[in-house]
Length: 366
Image 1 (cartoon, one colour):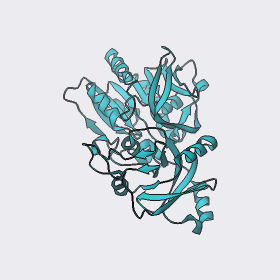
Image 2 (tube, one colour):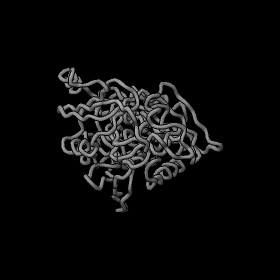
Image 3 (cartoon, helix red, strand yellow):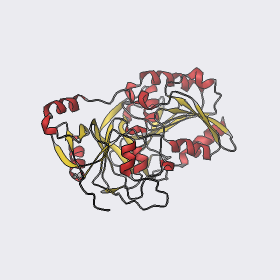
Image 4 (tube, helix red, strand yellow):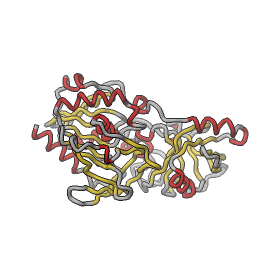
């Protein structure tokens, strides 16, 4: 990494009053968000363009970010949704034949304020011990208005996240040869969900988050995909009501991440906020049927409460090997299964991509 001369100062201010001073890259100004960390060693482009990070200031625990540059082919969505970005070091001399740009220019273009040269290990320990907390990145000395800034930080909440990231229009994507038609709900979907479906011969119709059962039925799909997305799942009361009716269409349903949580809520289960969430490409998940452990990519701050799944509607199918939280549900009262992790992940392990094949098999059965 080349030496960065004349770097401007920047600060991270946490809700508990802790201040980390470092240097600025990307855009300038002040931004408030929920401070989280991801343990992924690669895939920073996928992180930066994952809509599930809406409203959050993302910290990379891996110490060097940007070494393979930026290329638009690896984006998970059309833009970045992170509120701010924190790294230990960033590389301004990327080396990769696919690189189109460097990370500093990407952040500037996306109007994302970045902070580097802080102790990210100390910050990560703080979040792990105290739990996720709000914070602000600022390129203006916070000492001048610290009391006001702390009030704003402490008052911040992530609201209407799905509304902020979903597309308003329906769009169809067709492979060269299509065997099935899948309606993909856009709660903030990642591009690779669509790609995995198309690779398996699916015509994918991406619909807005608030699409009704009647509107889905009019598209005559063979299956329904519920995507990932940001925010507190329980605040999406309108979507949850729609899902209760969509289930009655008796079509195969596959849910990922937020889609998994919303489906559970529609079936009468509960969700809870985790202390610091699961974010990274190395989360171990146990399949309770086979006993096999998979390495998975994850990005979520909420989880379905295990014992809130009624035996009359389904069963927990996967659990996190670390904290035993719910990582999957198979429903017995309808043709649906959902997982908390990302089987489509690129920039992460591909161990669980077989779940897309299970979804295809469910559509084959009709």
